[in-house]
Amino acid sequence: MYRLIEQGKPIKLNDLPKGENMTNFSLLNDLSAPLTFRSFSIKYVFEGCEHYQVNGNKYNVKSGEYLLANTFCEGKIEIDSKDVVKGICIDISPTLLSEVFSNYITPDCPFPDVVLDDFFSSEAFLENKYNTNNTTLGKTLDELSRKFSDNPFHNYNLDNEFYFTLAENIIEDHQAIISQLYNINTVKHHTRKDLYRRLCRGKAFLENNVSKQISIGNAAEYATLSEYHFFRLFKTAFGITPQQYLIQTRLSKSLDLLRIGNYSITEASISTGFADVYSFSKAFKKHFGFSPSRVIENKLAGLDK
Image 1: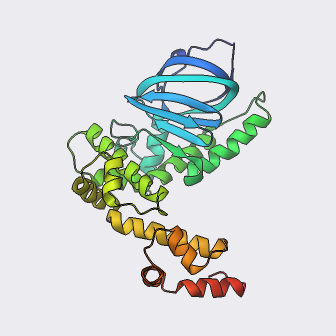
Image 2 (image 1 turned 45 degrees about the vertical axis):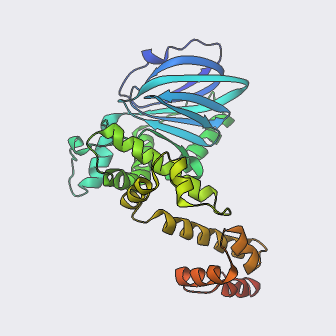
Image 3 (image 1 turned 90 degrees about the horizontal axis):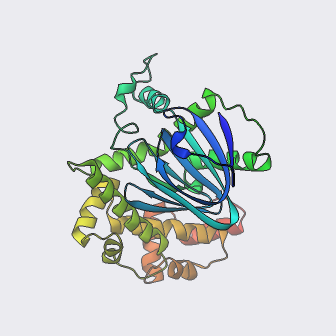
């Protein structure tokens, strides 16, 4: 089912059917309404920004971002913009998603047991915001948004295969997340999810500050955790210490600078936060198995590596 939602045409969000597959393409600039998540929901923004409050957490979903939430979530949505905000809301039947997920768990079973899904259809699910550049589902949503935007008034026929594909995308993107989340050993689901969100904030802080002289204590503070708690939980969830992750992120960034940009070895080392060229070159060769100079030589020779 496909629906176009336009400004000025009344719609009661909470009166829509629950537990069904549904896709809405919205063209709105003013909306304030309570929100009940009727199914497993994807809230994607193609242009503009939508403001959500879900289970006490605030999410400003901007262009190229989307929010995932299930039926254990509730909150509200606000849109206040001079320009039209284009968004896609997709509801996936929890039963359909559970069936696809159960098939991943028991691939040899011709009729998977939906009861096996104790994550996507439960309170354990981590409602969160994602960038389309970083996920499999994001690529599908970007393609879909361009299609709807070009012709929003078309009566699109979105069958079960469409929703099966989306479910597969979601599960593929969450394989690592589920493992990382359950590595955090807590009794309560909301505590586990809160700690995981804090870890992800700290992880993003490390990724976004590779060029600066930062400490793990800075990342822990940004994550609102003590440094030891951040260190212990980070290692438990991601299988690597924060310091090791920071070094790996810096080295990956330096490789991109050497391959793609016109950076010298010295410039690449400074731009990725290394104290000196010697320590950079040593860490680079240990991590990749070849020296920074080899990257430049191969680039000049027209080779890939």
